[in-house]
Amino acid sequence: MANNKLPEVWLRGPLHDMPAMVQPVAHALLQAREELAGLMAGFPNELLWDKVAGMASPGFHLQHLTGVLERLFTYARGEMLTEKQLSYLSTEGKPSNKTYTVSQLVENFNNQVDASLTQLSATNETTLTDIRYVGRAQLPSTVMGLYTHSAEHTMRHLGQLIVTVAVLRG
Image (cartoon, rainbow, N blue to C red; front, side, top):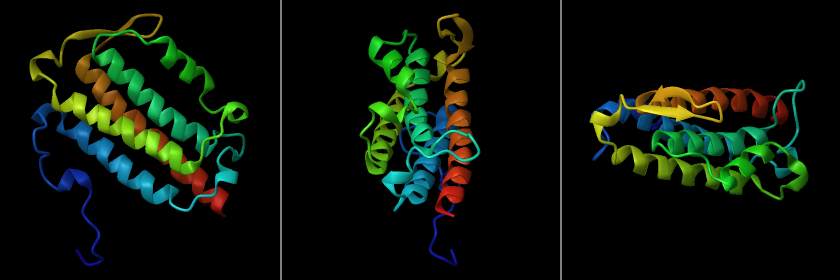
């Protein structure tokens, strides 16, 4: 590569010990982790909870990226959310109770990506079409649907975070 940058994760080849059907999900999560690390490097803690045009703050996006991955992977296992997960959900984006730093929130996301990759690597591909129920309303999805949505939702919020951080950095 001309500038010594690696190609995007999905262009680096298959991941060792990752079932083929969930490779795209793993690639997306790894790509998000890399982009997030670069984006948030040097971002000031004092701007963490600032909003642009009334949109969500960087702190919200960082908390939500972590929380939604954990919740979707919980549903993919066929489990209901715990009280701890529901409590975390209710505090996403609320700076009044938070003393987090940017680096702590990035580390939390990285740890959740690691946990998600571990779950993906242990996935039996024959279970990908199994029905799972989501949320209090118990709406139906499949294991693959939950995994795919986790990748899509992660990239959606990363995109929003990229714009918000760019505006806040001026």
